[in-house]
Image (cartoon, rainbow, N blue to C red):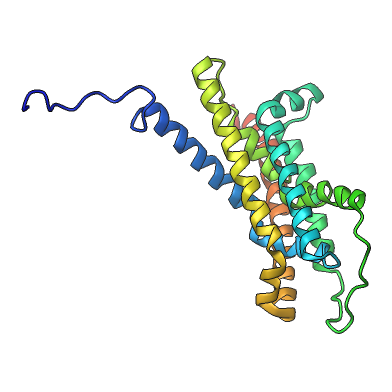
Length: 242
C-alpha cells in the first residue's frame, strides 16, 4: 500500500483547487468591502427612526423590501453599472461628488432635526403598502443603504472583469453571492432595529441616531473628497509635467 497510498491530484473543481479558492477570496473581499461601506448597524437606527410608527411585522416587511431593493441595485451595478455610466457620459468622479453631496445633505438634515419628546408618542399611521414601497426604495435603499459609495465600490470590484468565459462565470457567481449575502445582512439587521433601540433605551437610541447621522454626513463628505481627488489628480499631473 506504500506506493498506492500516494496522494491523488485534486480535481479541477474541488474545494482545494485554485479556482475555488479564488472564488471564495473574491466573495469575502467584495462582501467585507461593501458591508463596511453600507454599515447596516448604523443604518438600522436611521431605518428605525423613519419607521417609528410601524409595527414589528410591518417593519420587517419593509426591511425585506429594502434588502431586495439593495440586492437588485447591486446586481444591476455589478453587471451593467459601467456601461450605463459610459452611455450617459458620467464618470466615477461625478457619481461620487453628486452622490456624496446627496448623502451629506441627508446626514446634515438628520443631524439637525429636532428631537421628539419621549412622552409624546408619534401618531399611529395606517400601513400603506404603496407608501411603504416608496420608502423602501427612496430614501431607505438609495441613498441611505446602497448609496453612491456602495455603487462606486461595486463598479470598481468588477472594473477588471475580462471577457474570458471562465473568468466571467466566476466573476458573475461572486457578484451574485456577494449581493445575496449583503441583502441577507441588511434584512436581518434592519428587521431587528426595534430590538436594538429597545436595548439602548430612549436616550441611547437618540444618541445612536445622532452618531449615525454624523457618520452619514462624514461618509458623504469623504465620498465628495474622493471624487474631487480623482478629478483633480490628472489636472495636477498635467501641470506638474515639464
